[in-house]
Amino acid sequence: MDKRIVGALCCALWVLSTGCGDECVDQFDCRSDKGQPAEGQEWVCTGDNECEQRPIQTPTPEPDAGGGDDDAGVPDAGVPDAGVPDAGTGDDAGTPDGGGQGTGAKGDACTGSGDCGPGLRCEGAPLTCQAMHVAVTGRDDAGVSAALVMRYDTPGMTSLSAAGTDSRYPRWGPGGTHLSFAQGAVDTATEKSAGDLTVREVPLVEGQGVVVADGGTGNTEAFRSMEWEPGTAIAWVRQNGSQRSGISAVTPGGTGGVVQATTTGAFPDWSRDGTTFVYNVNGEGLFTAAGGGAAPTPLANAGTTAEQAHYNRVNDQLLFLANPNNELVTFEGDTTPTPLVRLYNINVTGGGAPQLVADVSTEASTDGTVDSFIASPIWAPDGTWAAYVRAYYFRPTTGGAVLCGGAVSPCQDRSGNVIFLRAINPQDGSATGTEVRLVDDGTLPSFSPDGRFVAFIKAGQLHVQRIDPATGAQEGAAIIHPKAGFTLQTGDSDDHRPRWQPR
Image 1 (cartoon, rainbow, N blue to C red):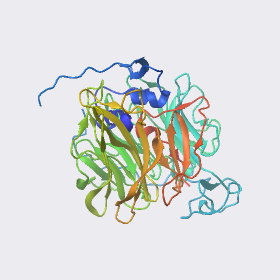
Image 2 (cartoon, rainbow, N blue to C red):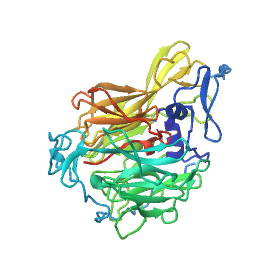
Image 3 (cartoon, rainbow, N blue to C red):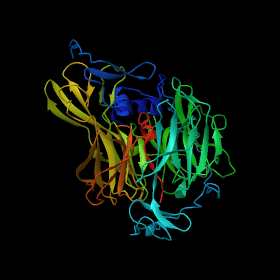
Image 4 (cartoon, rainbow, N blue to C red):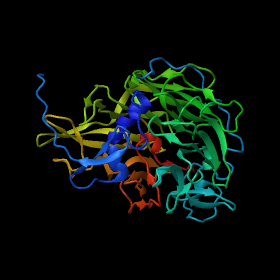
């Protein structure tokens, strides 16, 4: 999130009628994707959702004043067929995790991924330990988006689509041998696409690709908030006009076709059982839906502002963002306030009250305060760590707030967004210890399946940092992937989070 959560919330959760551009929704997106502006200049996201550098304007103090979403109803009951994908989309090349962490080095023979060391999975013929892949979305110098895949430890990216063809939002299937992605040009003014939802094998086979849904069968003008593994189906949020609401799904290799899973809601996330997902409905909070035609279940204890929930892979705990006190801040140049969200954890099956994982913060500063809110949370797969972004901003005594990280006093030396880790007790879900500062100026953290690496995007490049699983501390220098003609995107928030290949 950082300030970019405003775009994510407006577009994917609140479904405001203003729409959101593909290049930017605010100056923070511009700075993240294009770097710092020239001296005396600042980034501005124009009405055409394009980044422009303009002279910094000194705000005029304000006088003392004296003192669409359609997600209104509870979704229906239907969810996708729980059938496992057939051999065309299943785990037909890699091997399962095996439930453990081995010592096999890269290139060593293996019988399962549990034989391999950190960052490795068992694959190929003959079976050997090889580095896991990471999938991201980039944009080339001509403005064409590309769904990209790369080994986490090796420079070089491969596009899933043909040269000059727009593609985005790659998602791994169960077993890590297939990738889905949206393909087709997007109108940046309306974010509408006549594209397809396509599945390809990994390793990539030239010319191979299966379209599993298009705009017509998928009942959408763009495939957004897509999620696949560990689910047996690919889920997405439908876009129709300016609205993004309602979840559909398709099981590659199945016989049921596209299913309307819910009539409303956004941000689906699959549980470890592969057939149940959590999602949020604006103003109502979190729901879970499962197969068999049962009605969705509201998670009332999470509160009505709960959103962007994520499961881990070992228990039924959920991370989610919420603004229970309805605290808001208005940034300079914005007309819509930004919610000051906190990060919580809740046990889906055990009930009980949400537990605070990361709070907003404030500290005194000259002529105002330096504050922060939380964004882009994600689990370590084993549920022992949460990663998130803390977005810092300066709130002056008068006038609009300004994000840190630019040439704005008094926080010009502060990073606008910082990735933190927080340890979680997997038994009761409580946050333990103090938050661990992982990296400045990074965003969209993502844990490797073995929990030993965190991938994130910084200055348009993929970074991969090894961590100590006991303390969360960095181990060695980060692996930095050169842009190689592609600037990695962050403006669509969780849609652009790096995705690790399953073990």
